[in-house]
Image 1 (tube, helix red, strand yellow):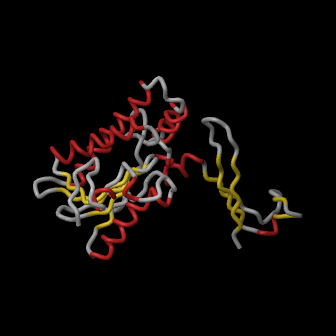
Image 2: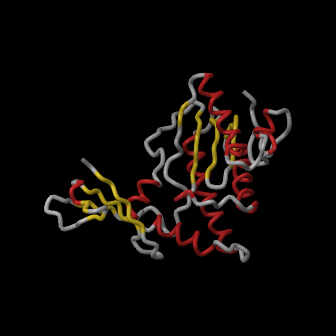
Image 3: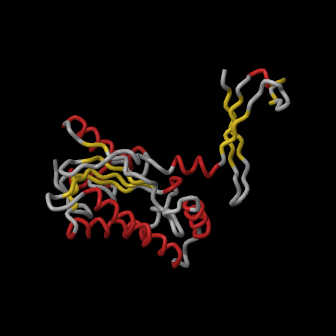
Length: 237
């Protein structure tokens, strides 16, 4: 029998979470764990390994040329960066640039506080995987720089601390890691799957109780599907 205990201690910039697997329930006495029990084994997993695992979302999901994908790009540790318009606008402007200059084709999108959903493909002259790579690289640097230079950002030190911590054990990261690895790419091959993802994307702000109606949310394509005009050009499906 396997008993799992999660112990959390709040200690800034330290290994502050350990996942302990206790492989013998008899190690518990009167509701308290007895580490001296002879048949008890303990496996401890440091927080940086847990964070590394949680920040590699959809890394193995490959993107092929000539297909439409449902995509999710998430900020490391699900940090709510996109609560300020200045950071949202960086993302929107970059998506516009990629549409106008890189061949990005959007069918649907929604930006939430810590992640971005897209239904997208690339035109026949470009590669979606390369577009997303460059998009994440540019927005990562631009948003982090804005956080650093923004004198009104009250969460500055906490967010930069998190970005630095996550990137610390990654040799590819020089200073800060903003996006999780991968894009959770799911190829859309059936109409039913497309309709389900369209509804899922547009209902995100409603389920989060940001708005009552999906088309009232500024940072999504729901308004386009309701007959209006949103912030980005969309091909309706």
